[in-house]
Picture 1 (tube, rainbow, N blue to C red):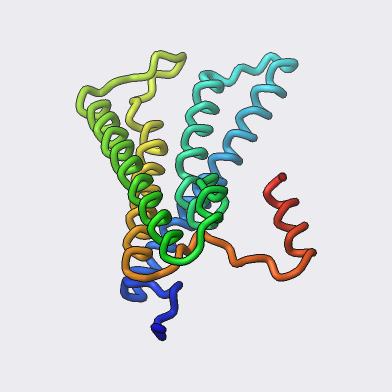
Picture 2 (cartoon, rainbow, N blue to C red):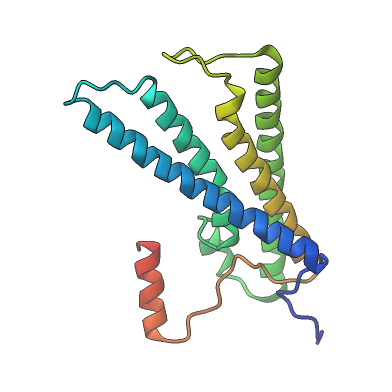
Length: 194
């Protein structure tokens, strides 16, 4: 039996803190974009009866929604709140479960790297050709695409991080420990919305 803590990182402490800080920062940015959506929607709703127009408000709200969704992915993944193949994986124990976790993480890593690369390429192309939005306010498209692209890149980093951690003997950090009491089971069911 190894004396290594299965949740210990293979990376140096400064890198582990930096990566965890990146995921948390990304989650905070997602929250800020949620607040921006709220403010824009309130301005649009309150402005109608007062004949106040918010130019391209719908465009900005939709860009904020995309940024919020994609920037929140890495933090959600690392917090163990992302939907995954848990129903399949949890049926197995021991080495078989570990292999299934590694395969699932490898597939997830490949998929997120693929999407992150093409999101980066799309954003770079928009920047190079100076693509502009076609709404009321012409905005360079690479600006709203940064949230989408950045969120996918950070998610890809999180997947690579977790895959390396599990490959080198760690247990998945996104997995929550088994509930010990009936109250914990109920609390988790309430939190997950089940």
